[in-house]
Image (cartoon, rainbow, N blue to C red; front, side, top):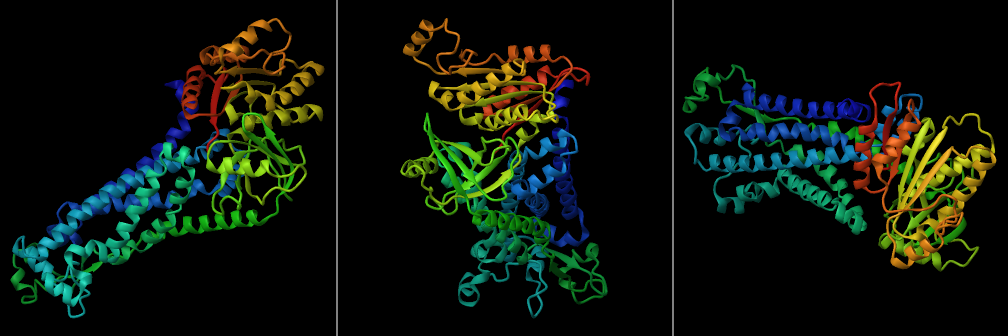
Length: 572
């Protein structure tokens, strides 16, 4: 339990606060509508479904206010820069923006379901009351209206279906949910939300990214409907009258309403729409975010080099005026020749000390396949197709030099942020940078095939040589793991096993076969660094992330004088 506090303490606190606010809002508004005297007559018609509809609405307002903020990348980068002098714990929370975005989305989905079901019951009870199915009081309340039809309780105003068709189709009870402002916007909002959530499933997002991308932009319709949803004001409360309406006495004498001083005709009005007040601020921030992205898109990007690497990996070396980056950061790339709207994230593999920035793109879907095909057709030395680049944006890997000891774990193409880090280390050693506080780096790379090592082995060879020349061979410990091989490869390795360099990479460090035994690795790091804070950085699959997160908790010591592991993961 104590170990978990090191890695999960502040995250758990933020989650607790968010959940506490949700629970408070639900309970507060539930009892407000369930016990409030101004809703006595409304509750008589609708029963407990009134409170079950309104309490989720309050929670929805709060979460719809939050849902856009975690995806405002420029805002998060600004905040991350502001927290540079603050604790790493605060910055780590910003790196979990997508996790929080998903949690808020799940809460919105849950509250939407409860809100919708409760209002379906409300609509049924309104209609039955209008038809005189219930008691005398319910019928009397449903019949109330003034000459302008502005003060009433039951929003379903007409009882006869044929008359409805002839007089005012807007008020047909059976179509009320699809023709009123509240009903129509509610249907549109719900359909948009269903499409957004279902297309966000991992299997859809990974295999059909375009479907995820386009349907996610239904959030524009969602928020537009949300702003106007409350304008129908179908939930109405009793207003003060002079003389006051004595509910306790008058509820049993509806025939005397307007006839005796104690029972003036009750007046009702819908509440002022409040949702727009919750979402207008985040909407303005998000619009500014999109404007900044558009400006960056319009800025020219030049090609320095286009290189096809093994394993269907494309390297693009690009130049953009005023572009400044830090290690481990990422950019979003758009190619109008493929799609005007699609933007895809790629971690930069270049170092801040270089006069260009580079990205490595692996074939992993329709968009990347099309881009690689286009780049293959570009003549050597010629300019490629127009690209839009938005960024750079900060990630957890930015903090790698804030730790005395760092563990870098990459899986497949997930090695890209660590290419940037290792390149930057090389430049810092070359320039004898006195600000470099990191004294030890453990680097692990897991790949399924041998060709994937080829484009990165050159960098490791340069680093290996540089460390030896400076007498700092212990600074970088790296282990490469090949998780897939065939019999011919195994035979080849056995024949050349006694060579000084590895037959796969050409490095002095031999390639390991299989997967790391993480308990053994963490135990070794803890033994070699008994009093250090170790930053553990992963760019790889979620399953591996869960394993490493547990190991960080397991091998961390609560005693600040001993080894502690802090887990950090790249999130896109």
